[in-house]
Length: 282
Image (tube, rainbow, N blue to C red; front, side, top):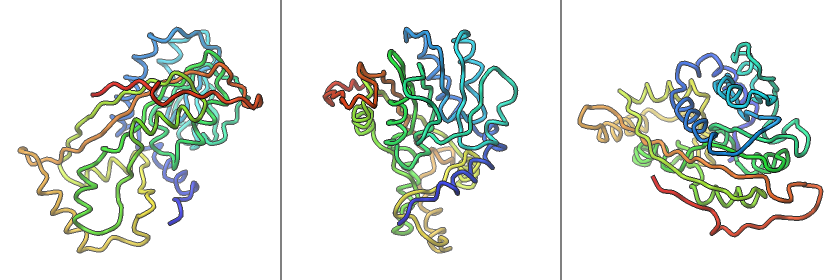
């Protein structure tokens, strides 16, 4: 089945500019964790890129952390950038797969949850490698394969379609970071539990955040009422002692640096063994 058109994703994210600030608890929590890691990096950036900035939740903290740096917030939805309000960040509407920035022009790429919205992280990682100059840092968060595992399991009892995206696991993502030409990757993960009263509340939050089922095995039509009833019954059997739906969110955090030879035009490749990827459990 064909991928979800990027034009449809853009429409969803343009609408989500209004609703995301009210339902961005996950974005906010992951953003604060990423920001807390910046003091440990010896970095004096001239240009900071907030990649997939959304409504600019990280702008103020990044500007305070690096007062001498130029701050650029990039998002593909202009409404997201307009929702960011007035601050010191320069707003750029652009595609993360084709960054409108020169080679080796960025010292810090801050990327909170953008990879979770992409069909594939590969072109984004390649672009990060292209624009990052030594000793630049790529700091990111994304989602792991156990995210919404409860919904995935319930749907397997209802029909044969796939309804929940299965994100790359930490090891595979680390491999992609290395293959992109970034150096010294460090990845770790944590598991969060998010509790909801019912599936309607879950769907409301997912829609508000601009999420979509982009799996290859998705139903091309409408889900039938019989499958819907089976799904809800399967979820009801998974309620906790308080009668609520406890859903898993697996979060992957990562960082990597511009390689010693980071010039894409040089024709040289930097090879790093996959064993060099350091992993820390929950």
